Image (cartoon, rainbow, N blue to C red; front, side, top):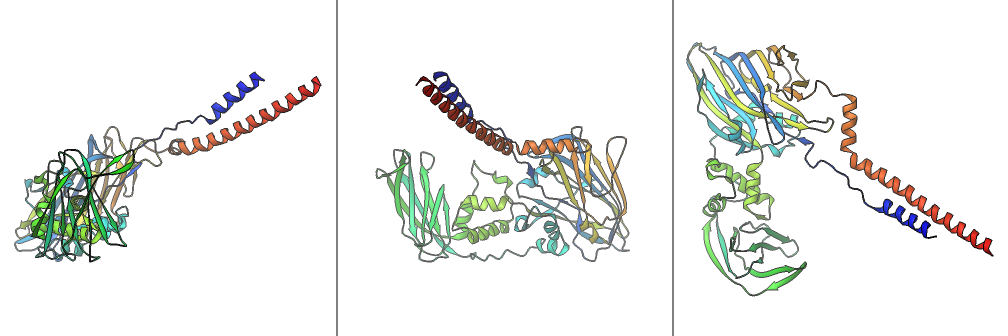
Length: 475
């Protein structure tokens, strides 16, 4: 009997002891926006592109984040077909957030000499589905570009430039670290609130009550609440957590400083970069960009914080580098745009990531004429193969891929780099099992546990019956 019980206990331990499953924590996909061809913003341009050399160079094997970095050179051989001098306005469009533009290492050259340019900021790309290439493509049309390249001032909807609001600066004094909340009720449902120095806020729809909270310590001794539409009465509460219980704290002092101030004056101080945020030198000078961010934040948020503004500014948007190029009568010039590009990563069907690079060729249709496009792709040693390309590319003896087109292709360019020449069925199966290992482990483990429990029950029944027979035999 003792032996039977030992076996039974061991079986239960084996069945019920949890088994850990390991899984990759990184993303299996990462989207990057397409690159865009240089384009004219003159609807009646006399400039023709007689030849373009487009080169994607990955030979330096640089990677960053979730992508491989390619150095792009788009060189255009242009001619003015007019028998008179002209100035040709051009733009190089890109989709980036306002801080990542510096990482692209953009150079614009005219006949080999650096060309200065003016930066314009267009619409936020996330206003469309950023993973839908066709929707992004629709925004790279001449009419949309012309809309963005304008000096017309931004016209806000949710505030006026001459608005005046009330700023409440709450200064705290306490010997101990603690949590504080400032509560107030709004009379108007559409009132606009900005808050600085808080790390939480809440809103109760039934009562229109708003709470802004912060953790008070030697670094943080104040909170700001700016009310645009109405004056408010603040209730200050101090508390701490003790074993997940809230304990009210009364042993602290506070002072509320109330000031009437213009919205824009407060907003620029509100945005002021500090050591924990982006360096002030990298903030664009275009004020309309920040007015747009404030307008959108007031539209979407009950309480606007600096994080809300920076989140909107950090979203990828259409950025246009605009410049004018003078051409004499029947003049020919070479224009070159150099920059770093990133590809979309995908590891859903392969053991190693694939990297796909998209390049919008269609904006080049805006030129008076376009012909003789040469595309060259120089892969890296670690990713030496083009797995897919929608345009015909021929592999050269040096390992590069080249495509030649007499006229502008009907399709935009898209190609995928990989470490192997093709993805085999065995690799797909291995990747499928790898991605679903936890699922298979769970199902398999559950099935084994079920069999184990049935076995234990069978052993218990068998042992019980055997003992009864022994007992009957003794009688």
